[in-house]
Image (cartoon, rainbow, N blue to C red; front, side):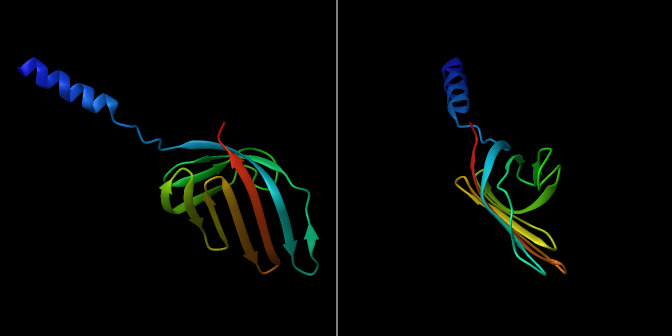
Amino acid sequence: MRRFIITLVTLVICSMPVRAEEKVWYCEMVGFVSTGNSSKIHKNEKFKMKVTPSRIVFGTGGRFDRWSMTVRNFNSAKSWIAQGLTYTAGMDNGKFLFSQISTEGATAISAICDNF
């Protein structure tokens, strides 16, 4: 009987879903604009980012070159909000939004992301 209970508990534990604590996303901008003394529509870029419950870390190159952000609200690797003094970013089911303000102007970026 003891062997049966141990086997049963082991099977239950092994069949439980494992929560992924990090995920890598491959993204392509669909909008990238900035304003200041003048407005500019930038060329859309592709970028990669790793999402963890505490940080968003971007790959090399482009607008987000090796940049990282602090996560403020983490529901899952596909639903989160990151905020700093001058920026707010978020993702909801593969839709990424980013805004940043400074004394020189503002930037807004939207992107579609996939995690192949």
